[in-house]
Image (cartoon, helix red, strand yellow):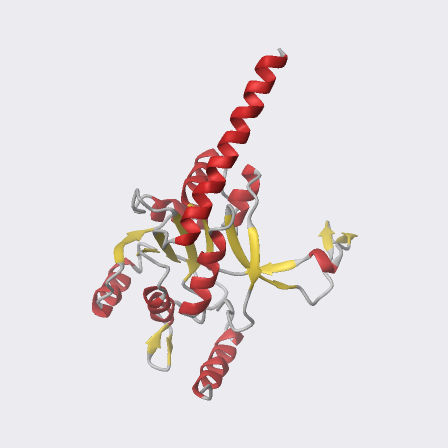
Length: 257
């Protein structure tokens, strides 16, 4: 019994050591990273289709697509969109002439279903998978590359910003508890993960209705995902008032040297 236990432990240690060597090797070279751009949201709170909404003459979708294209860490791009937007999104992607675009595919009813549709198109040689919301148009190439590079060190990487408001847990119209603010962070995208681990985590997933964030899939498997610093300009366009902030960000970028 002791021999079997020791043998099993040795096997696990060898596996961990091997994985450590793989991560070290991956960090020294450019890893093949497949980026899934999720553009399948319903835009209910926006009141209009936010992905085709133009900011300074350019659809929101194009900002995110061009940033992924410009990132030196991204090897290929898969765009996932709704059935209704598929013809228009395909036309936009074709017009841009992206060198990294692999496919434009129809998504599902939930975010997780859409991500699964994107995963089906990811190349087998992919070592990292980055997932980005098309509704976050201001994540620039440098920031995207930073997140992907961070993901080489562990199971994955998620950009976060500390929460500034006090958060309350509410059930049945009553406050149940108040989590310590120092432990709360708002997650952004892109989020990048070890490709094999992420695929395995998705396969183990039983239901996806409550999955609102890609790293939740890894959490369910117990994988240790690292965090990296998010950006205040990396806003998600959700409500009409977000458009005003988006225009302000574009004006601020014009003033940058």
